[in-house]
Image (cartoon, rainbow, N blue to C red; front, side):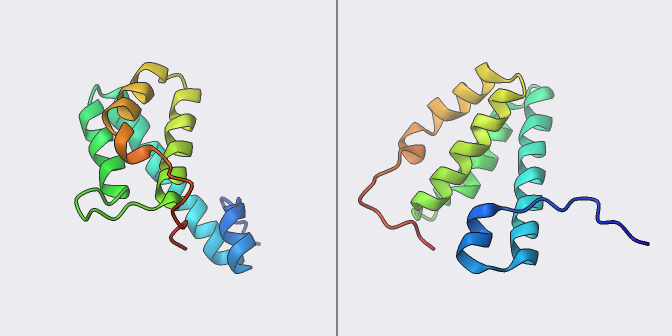
Length: 109
């Protein structure tokens, strides 16, 4: 009998789509990205971690939505909870303009 390694889901995705596979895939992607941030930070490459978040926020395309902001804010919070508070604040400070959430914007979904 085959057991799935990870069966956690992204609740927000599931709530909007009712698609369990999509919610699981998004959760795995989130965990992978968080892991990459931690890997970069643990190697002393905070600027690379910042670049990863900036790419996810679509800064160069000038198209950041509340969904991306909330997603990466949550990711940075999770990195801080793993013991990298100083580095998480450094990333947040560098990208503060892009991580700020304007309540008047749509969430981009």
